[in-house]
Amino acid sequence: MRFYVERTLRAVFTIWAALTLTFALIRFMPGGPVEKMRGEISRNNPFLTEQQIQSRLQDRLARLNINLEKPMHEQYVDYMVGFVQGNLGYSIEESRPVADIVGEALPWTLLVMVTATVLVFIIAIVWGALVAYYEGGIFDTVSSSVSILTSAVPFYVMAFALLLVFSFDMGLFPSQGRMPPLQDDRFIVGSLPAGPDFWIAAFQHAALPIASVVLTQAGLQTLAMRGNSIQVLGEDFVRVARLRGLADRRIATRYVARNAILPLYTGFLTLIGFNLGASIILEQVFRYRGLGWYMFQGLESRDYALVMGTFLVYTVALVLAVYIADLTYSKIDPRVKQGDASEAY
Image: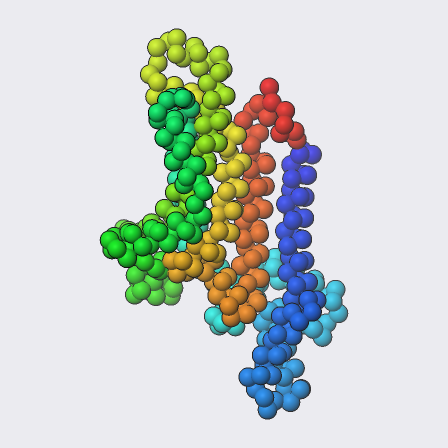
Protein backbone atom coordinates (compact mmCIF):
# COMPACT_ATOMS: atom_id res chain seq x y z
CA MET A 1 0.00 0.00 0.00
CA ARG A 2 2.83 2.40 0.85
CA PHE A 3 4.35 1.80 -2.59
CA TYR A 4 1.13 2.81 -4.37
CA VAL A 5 0.65 5.87 -2.17
CA GLU A 6 4.22 7.07 -2.79
CA ARG A 7 3.90 6.65 -6.57
CA THR A 8 0.52 8.42 -6.60
CA LEU A 9 1.83 11.33 -4.56
CA ARG A 10 4.87 11.59 -6.85
CA ALA A 11 2.65 11.78 -9.95
CA VAL A 12 0.33 14.35 -8.36
CA PHE A 13 3.31 16.46 -7.25
CA THR A 14 4.82 16.44 -10.76
CA ILE A 15 1.55 17.59 -12.34
CA TRP A 16 1.14 20.26 -9.66
CA ALA A 17 4.70 21.49 -10.31
CA ALA A 18 3.99 21.75 -14.05
CA LEU A 19 0.79 23.70 -13.38
CA THR A 20 2.59 26.04 -11.00
CA LEU A 21 5.34 26.59 -13.57
CA THR A 22 2.87 27.60 -16.28
CA PHE A 23 1.09 29.90 -13.81
CA ALA A 24 4.37 31.63 -12.95
CA LEU A 25 5.61 31.89 -16.53
CA ILE A 26 2.59 33.89 -17.65
CA ARG A 27 2.62 36.28 -14.71
CA PHE A 28 6.15 36.76 -13.40
CA MET A 29 8.61 36.55 -16.30
CA PRO A 30 10.10 39.97 -17.14
CA GLY A 31 8.82 40.97 -20.56
CA GLY A 32 6.66 37.86 -20.51
CA PRO A 33 3.31 37.12 -22.17
CA VAL A 34 1.31 39.79 -20.35
CA GLU A 35 3.68 42.60 -21.37
CA LYS A 36 3.87 41.26 -24.92
CA MET A 37 0.07 41.27 -25.15
CA ARG A 38 0.00 44.85 -23.94
CA GLY A 39 2.61 45.80 -26.54
CA GLU A 40 0.72 44.07 -29.35
CA ILE A 41 -2.51 45.85 -28.47
CA SER A 42 -0.69 49.19 -28.30
CA ARG A 43 1.10 48.71 -31.64
CA ASN A 44 -1.99 47.49 -33.49
CA ASN A 45 -4.16 50.27 -32.04
CA PRO A 46 -1.95 53.38 -31.70
CA PHE A 47 -4.89 55.72 -31.00
CA LEU A 48 -6.18 53.86 -27.94
CA THR A 49 -5.84 55.46 -24.53
CA GLU A 50 -4.05 53.68 -21.70
CA GLN A 51 -7.40 52.87 -20.13
CA GLN A 52 -8.69 51.32 -23.37
CA ILE A 53 -5.49 49.31 -23.77
CA GLN A 54 -5.86 48.02 -20.21
CA SER A 55 -9.50 47.13 -20.87
CA ARG A 56 -8.62 45.12 -23.96
CA LEU A 57 -5.74 43.48 -22.11
CA GLN A 58 -8.06 42.44 -19.28
CA ASP A 59 -10.52 40.99 -21.79
CA ARG A 60 -7.78 38.95 -23.43
CA LEU A 61 -6.37 37.80 -20.08
CA ALA A 62 -9.85 36.74 -18.94
CA ARG A 63 -9.87 34.28 -21.82
CA LEU A 64 -6.61 32.89 -20.43
CA ASN A 65 -8.23 32.48 -17.02
CA ILE A 66 -6.17 35.41 -15.67
CA ASN A 67 -7.53 38.27 -13.60
CA LEU A 68 -4.75 40.67 -12.58
CA GLU A 69 -7.10 42.63 -10.32
CA LYS A 70 -7.39 39.70 -7.89
CA PRO A 71 -4.72 38.93 -5.28
CA MET A 72 -2.10 36.46 -6.50
CA HIS A 73 -3.24 33.62 -4.24
CA GLU A 74 -6.80 33.92 -5.57
CA GLN A 75 -5.50 33.89 -9.14
CA TYR A 76 -3.56 30.74 -8.31
CA VAL A 77 -6.61 29.00 -6.84
CA ASP A 78 -8.75 30.00 -9.83
CA TYR A 79 -6.08 28.68 -12.20
CA MET A 80 -5.92 25.30 -10.45
CA VAL A 81 -9.69 24.98 -10.20
CA GLY A 82 -10.03 25.86 -13.87
CA PHE A 83 -7.58 23.12 -14.84
CA VAL A 84 -9.41 20.51 -12.77
CA GLN A 85 -12.65 21.57 -14.46
CA GLY A 86 -11.06 21.25 -17.90
CA ASN A 87 -10.70 24.99 -18.49
CA LEU A 88 -7.41 25.40 -20.37
CA GLY A 89 -8.18 28.91 -21.53
CA TYR A 90 -9.32 30.38 -24.83
CA SER A 91 -7.22 30.37 -28.00
CA ILE A 92 -7.13 33.83 -29.57
CA GLU A 93 -5.70 32.48 -32.84
CA GLU A 94 -8.22 29.63 -33.23
CA SER A 95 -11.14 31.54 -31.66
CA ARG A 96 -12.28 28.61 -29.56
CA PRO A 97 -11.53 27.02 -26.15
CA VAL A 98 -8.19 25.22 -25.88
CA ALA A 99 -9.97 22.19 -24.41
CA ASP A 100 -11.91 21.83 -27.68
CA ILE A 101 -8.69 22.02 -29.69
CA VAL A 102 -7.07 19.37 -27.49
CA GLY A 103 -10.12 17.13 -27.80
CA GLU A 104 -9.96 17.38 -31.59
CA ALA A 105 -6.18 17.10 -32.06
CA LEU A 106 -5.09 14.62 -29.39
CA PRO A 107 -6.70 11.51 -31.00
CA TRP A 108 -4.73 12.17 -34.21
CA THR A 109 -1.45 12.46 -32.35
CA LEU A 110 -2.24 9.30 -30.38
CA LEU A 111 -3.10 7.49 -33.61
CA VAL A 112 0.38 8.13 -34.98
CA MET A 113 2.51 7.86 -31.87
CA VAL A 114 0.81 4.95 -30.10
CA THR A 115 0.65 2.95 -33.33
CA ALA A 116 4.32 3.70 -34.03
CA THR A 117 5.41 2.78 -30.50
CA VAL A 118 3.49 -0.50 -30.54
CA LEU A 119 5.04 -1.41 -33.90
CA VAL A 120 8.50 -0.52 -32.57
CA PHE A 121 8.17 -2.96 -29.70
CA ILE A 122 6.61 -5.74 -31.75
CA ILE A 123 9.49 -5.53 -34.21
CA ALA A 124 12.07 -5.23 -31.42
CA ILE A 125 10.74 -8.22 -29.50
CA VAL A 126 10.66 -10.62 -32.42
CA TRP A 127 13.74 -9.33 -34.21
CA GLY A 128 15.82 -8.97 -31.03
CA ALA A 129 15.01 -12.49 -29.86
CA LEU A 130 15.97 -13.99 -33.23
CA VAL A 131 19.19 -11.98 -33.40
CA ALA A 132 20.18 -13.12 -29.91
CA TYR A 133 19.42 -16.75 -30.74
CA TYR A 134 21.76 -16.62 -33.74
CA GLU A 135 24.41 -14.61 -31.87
CA GLY A 136 27.72 -14.37 -33.69
CA GLY A 137 26.32 -15.35 -37.08
CA ILE A 138 25.83 -13.34 -40.25
CA PHE A 139 22.22 -12.58 -39.34
CA ASP A 140 23.36 -11.14 -35.99
CA THR A 141 26.11 -9.05 -37.58
CA VAL A 142 23.93 -7.59 -40.32
CA SER A 143 20.97 -6.96 -38.03
CA SER A 144 23.08 -5.27 -35.36
CA SER A 145 24.76 -3.06 -37.96
CA VAL A 146 21.42 -2.01 -39.44
CA SER A 147 20.03 -1.33 -35.96
CA ILE A 148 22.96 0.91 -35.05
CA LEU A 149 22.75 2.75 -38.37
CA THR A 150 19.01 3.45 -38.24
CA SER A 151 19.04 4.44 -34.57
CA ALA A 152 21.70 7.08 -35.35
CA VAL A 153 19.38 8.87 -37.79
CA PRO A 154 17.15 11.58 -36.22
CA PHE A 155 13.46 10.89 -36.78
CA TYR A 156 12.90 14.23 -38.51
CA VAL A 157 15.71 13.50 -40.99
CA MET A 158 14.08 10.16 -41.73
CA ALA A 159 10.78 12.01 -42.15
CA PHE A 160 12.22 14.28 -44.85
CA ALA A 161 13.80 11.30 -46.62
CA LEU A 162 10.52 9.37 -46.64
CA LEU A 163 8.67 12.43 -47.93
CA LEU A 164 11.16 12.86 -50.76
CA VAL A 165 11.09 9.22 -51.86
CA PHE A 166 7.58 7.93 -51.19
CA SER A 167 5.55 11.12 -51.58
CA PHE A 168 7.27 13.55 -53.95
CA ASP A 169 9.12 11.06 -56.17
CA MET A 170 6.87 7.98 -56.15
CA GLY A 171 3.56 9.57 -55.14
CA LEU A 172 2.54 6.59 -53.01
CA PHE A 173 1.51 8.52 -49.91
CA PRO A 174 0.11 12.01 -49.19
CA SER A 175 2.75 14.59 -48.35
CA GLN A 176 0.77 16.46 -45.70
CA GLY A 177 -2.41 16.58 -43.67
CA ARG A 178 -4.21 14.03 -41.56
CA MET A 179 -7.05 13.44 -44.06
CA PRO A 180 -7.97 14.57 -47.58
CA PRO A 181 -8.90 18.29 -47.30
CA LEU A 182 -12.66 17.94 -47.78
CA GLN A 183 -12.94 14.99 -45.41
CA ASP A 184 -10.81 16.73 -42.79
CA ASP A 185 -13.10 19.77 -42.82
CA ARG A 186 -16.14 17.53 -42.40
CA PHE A 187 -14.48 15.73 -39.50
CA ILE A 188 -13.80 19.00 -37.67
CA VAL A 189 -17.52 19.79 -37.54
CA GLY A 190 -18.24 16.23 -36.41
CA SER A 191 -20.21 15.00 -39.43
CA LEU A 192 -17.73 12.51 -40.90
CA PRO A 193 -18.77 8.85 -40.43
CA ALA A 194 -15.86 6.76 -39.13
CA GLY A 195 -16.32 3.94 -41.65
CA PRO A 196 -13.73 1.90 -43.60
CA ASP A 197 -13.03 4.75 -46.03
CA PHE A 198 -12.28 7.04 -43.11
CA TRP A 199 -9.75 4.66 -41.55
CA ILE A 200 -8.09 3.88 -44.88
CA ALA A 201 -7.61 7.58 -45.56
CA ALA A 202 -6.45 8.23 -41.99
CA PHE A 203 -3.75 5.55 -42.11
CA GLN A 204 -2.63 6.60 -45.58
CA HIS A 205 -1.87 10.05 -44.20
CA ALA A 206 -0.38 8.66 -40.99
CA ALA A 207 1.81 6.04 -42.72
CA LEU A 208 4.89 8.19 -43.30
CA PRO A 209 4.90 9.79 -39.82
CA ILE A 210 4.54 6.32 -38.30
CA ALA A 211 7.34 4.95 -40.49
CA SER A 212 9.62 7.83 -39.48
CA VAL A 213 9.33 6.84 -35.83
CA VAL A 214 9.48 3.08 -36.38
CA LEU A 215 12.55 3.12 -38.63
CA THR A 216 14.57 5.28 -36.22
CA GLN A 217 13.53 3.63 -32.95
CA ALA A 218 13.10 -0.05 -33.72
CA GLY A 219 16.86 -0.59 -34.09
CA LEU A 220 17.72 0.73 -30.62
CA GLN A 221 14.97 -1.30 -28.98
CA THR A 222 16.09 -4.36 -30.94
CA LEU A 223 19.60 -4.02 -29.52
CA ALA A 224 18.15 -3.74 -26.02
CA MET A 225 16.02 -6.84 -26.62
CA ARG A 226 19.06 -8.66 -28.00
CA GLY A 227 21.03 -7.97 -24.82
CA ASN A 228 18.19 -9.18 -22.60
CA SER A 229 17.65 -12.25 -24.75
CA ILE A 230 21.33 -13.28 -24.65
CA GLN A 231 21.11 -13.24 -20.87
CA VAL A 232 17.96 -15.36 -20.91
CA LEU A 233 19.55 -17.86 -23.31
CA GLY A 234 21.90 -18.88 -20.52
CA GLU A 235 19.05 -19.95 -18.26
CA ASP A 236 18.38 -23.61 -17.49
CA PHE A 237 14.86 -23.68 -18.94
CA VAL A 238 16.23 -22.73 -22.37
CA ARG A 239 18.73 -25.59 -22.24
CA VAL A 240 15.90 -27.97 -21.35
CA ALA A 241 13.86 -26.72 -24.32
CA ARG A 242 16.78 -27.42 -26.63
CA LEU A 243 17.24 -30.91 -25.20
CA ARG A 244 13.55 -31.58 -25.86
CA GLY A 245 14.21 -30.87 -29.54
CA LEU A 246 11.94 -27.84 -29.88
CA ALA A 247 12.30 -25.73 -33.03
CA ASP A 248 14.73 -22.84 -32.86
CA ARG A 249 12.07 -20.29 -33.84
CA ARG A 250 9.74 -21.51 -31.11
CA ILE A 251 12.47 -21.27 -28.48
CA ALA A 252 13.47 -17.80 -29.66
CA THR A 253 9.98 -16.31 -29.76
CA ARG A 254 8.11 -18.21 -27.04
CA TYR A 255 10.70 -18.97 -24.38
CA VAL A 256 13.37 -16.32 -24.87
CA ALA A 257 11.20 -13.38 -25.96
CA ARG A 258 8.60 -13.90 -23.26
CA ASN A 259 11.17 -13.50 -20.49
CA ALA A 260 13.44 -10.95 -22.15
CA ILE A 261 10.56 -8.58 -22.84
CA LEU A 262 9.90 -7.83 -19.17
CA PRO A 263 12.72 -5.28 -18.66
CA LEU A 264 11.47 -3.40 -21.75
CA TYR A 265 7.98 -2.91 -20.35
CA THR A 266 8.72 0.32 -18.48
CA GLY A 267 10.54 1.69 -21.51
CA PHE A 268 7.50 0.95 -23.66
CA LEU A 269 5.20 3.22 -21.66
CA THR A 270 7.74 6.00 -21.18
CA LEU A 271 8.58 5.90 -24.90
CA ILE A 272 4.93 6.67 -25.67
CA GLY A 273 5.28 9.81 -23.57
CA PHE A 274 8.56 10.71 -25.27
CA ASN A 275 7.06 10.20 -28.71
CA LEU A 276 4.15 12.45 -27.84
CA GLY A 277 6.70 15.19 -27.20
CA ALA A 278 8.50 14.36 -30.45
CA SER A 279 5.24 14.89 -32.31
CA ILE A 280 5.77 18.66 -32.03
CA ILE A 281 8.52 18.46 -34.66
CA LEU A 282 7.18 15.53 -36.66
CA GLU A 283 3.78 17.10 -37.20
CA GLN A 284 5.40 20.25 -38.59
CA VAL A 285 7.26 18.19 -41.19
CA PHE A 286 4.06 16.52 -42.42
CA ARG A 287 1.76 19.45 -41.59
CA TYR A 288 -0.22 16.91 -39.61
CA ARG A 289 -2.73 18.79 -37.46
CA GLY A 290 -2.27 16.98 -34.21
CA LEU A 291 -1.52 18.35 -30.76
CA GLY A 292 2.11 19.14 -31.61
CA TRP A 293 1.09 21.08 -34.72
CA TYR A 294 -1.25 23.29 -32.70
CA MET A 295 1.39 23.84 -30.02
CA PHE A 296 3.88 25.04 -32.63
CA GLN A 297 1.25 27.30 -34.20
CA GLY A 298 0.59 28.75 -30.76
CA LEU A 299 4.29 29.50 -30.34
CA GLU A 300 4.46 31.26 -33.70
CA SER A 301 1.37 33.37 -33.07
CA ARG A 302 2.12 33.95 -29.37
CA ASP A 303 -1.14 32.23 -28.45
CA TYR A 304 -0.12 31.57 -24.87
CA ALA A 305 -3.29 29.79 -23.81
CA LEU A 306 -2.84 27.28 -26.64
CA VAL A 307 0.86 26.76 -25.85
CA MET A 308 0.34 26.31 -22.12
CA GLY A 309 -2.70 24.08 -22.59
CA THR A 310 -0.96 21.70 -24.97
CA PHE A 311 2.17 21.75 -22.78
CA LEU A 312 0.11 20.63 -19.79
CA VAL A 313 -1.47 17.82 -21.81
CA TYR A 314 1.97 16.55 -22.83
CA THR A 315 3.17 16.75 -19.22
CA VAL A 316 0.18 14.86 -17.85
CA ALA A 317 0.51 12.18 -20.55
CA LEU A 318 4.16 11.53 -19.71
CA VAL A 319 3.51 11.49 -15.96
CA LEU A 320 0.63 9.05 -16.38
CA ALA A 321 2.75 6.77 -18.57
CA VAL A 322 5.48 6.56 -15.93
CA TYR A 323 2.87 6.20 -13.18
CA ILE A 324 1.15 3.27 -14.91
CA ALA A 325 4.52 1.62 -15.55
CA ASP A 326 5.43 1.90 -11.86
CA LEU A 327 2.15 0.47 -10.65
CA THR A 328 1.92 -2.42 -13.10
CA TYR A 329 5.52 -3.58 -13.49
CA SER A 330 5.43 -5.78 -10.41
CA LYS A 331 2.26 -7.38 -11.77
CA ILE A 332 3.87 -8.09 -15.13
CA ASP A 333 7.09 -9.44 -13.60
CA PRO A 334 6.43 -11.19 -10.25
CA ARG A 335 10.19 -11.48 -9.64
CA VAL A 336 10.27 -7.75 -8.86
CA LYS A 337 9.28 -6.71 -5.37
CA GLN A 338 6.96 -3.77 -4.94
CA GLY A 339 8.82 -0.79 -3.64
CA ASP A 340 12.24 -2.08 -4.69
CA ALA A 341 12.47 -2.66 -8.41
CA SER A 342 16.17 -3.45 -8.10
CA GLU A 343 15.59 -6.71 -6.24
CA ALA A 344 14.67 -9.78 -8.21
CA TYR A 345 14.84 -13.42 -7.41
